[in-house]
Image 1: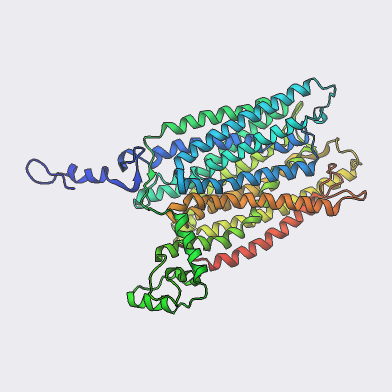
Image 2: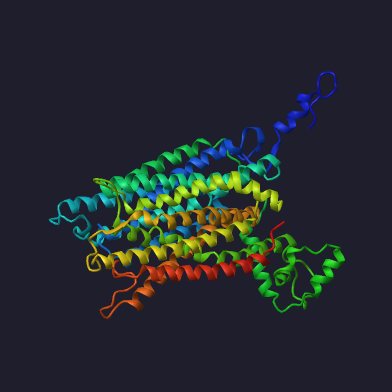
Length: 573
């Protein structure tokens, strides 16, 4: 549309007006009407979402970081059982986003799914606070004076606690699957400036997430250990309520995905796989002839998974040749299928990651945690070192490493997404190797001071020995986790970006379940018949060092497998 002056010639202002008020293609406003670039999206909208993410991570990790301490304390579970339960809950928390992504991309949309998931999460946090308040009231009437071995809660209290806990996980599944994709949707890929800002958004996203986690691990964990579990679980609930209110303030500025397809992406891709199975015995000659007749050039990415091309046509014995699925549908299915090997080769990264909130926390509880006379650092607060190292490394990576790498490689992001993920996997394996050496040293000191059979006596070894393994794990997270987020968002069809990010999240969920499975099996094999298992309640007789060595070895094998599949991966155009 042209804007003309009264004299009939175009003024500079009129030339710029269409650019300032250009309609953002593929997006609409909250009222379903076309939305303009000048008054929507960008950092204006992303800021609301970043605050929401910071608060939500504060709430989630306010529960998750110290959960093993609550289970082995007021709930009265053994170390192995508590670790299995934490891993199972964490795994479930990371798998529910797959369901949330399906609901968002097929039915509700990302915004509505975020709101509904947040409300469920708030309800779960409220019930969790109530359950701890009931347990605390009963514990206050208990004759035992040892907090860590207080009266066991009733079966109803335990069931109520776990019901509330898994309700938080369920609500988090709706929120977590969509909020990052919704934030990235606020930047238009077709605009050069916004496309550049979107790349920075993923770094600032992780910065906000880690800031929330850091505050939770420093403040909430201290409140839980030294003041009250009820307050420690209640504060995250209040913060989530405030976060949802802030998120709703941006409703008129958000960009919402326009629904241009009659058939959603799940249906299109599902139809490709169904048609491929139906046409499995058909030859590809008809496909080749049809492509030659149409004069369509071969796609480089189409060389992978050629068998899916059969979905484009009916079987050879049919009387007429007609397309069942379009070429774009087949390419979408191939794009999703190409992600599976990368996803599978990242699972052990999640196994290593979950150890720092479970076994490493129990490991730190046996060590000298004194900072000053009368003040001991809570063992779970040491996880804040991961958050600090992530935040610090992101700044170094974004401001120093990327510009240097960009000059060397010519890549706009310095290194590719897959290279970033692989580098983080190396640091993940390194963190487990360091953890092994530190645990071997701790066991040696325990034997030297005759503390093998004194599990309640502090081992005279400073908890600061754990710093290197937490820092290495933080660097690994900053590289691999952010790389996976960007990769799984970028390499899926636009309509499936919530699913793409849920694949990233689910890798940590499956990793948590694998960790739980390993602890259960190894505990049974190494324990029993009077023997102490690797995960004995008395960590001075346990062998966490063996388990850490196992994870370091498996991580190395995973890295080799990842390099193989990453080398063969073809990026989506």
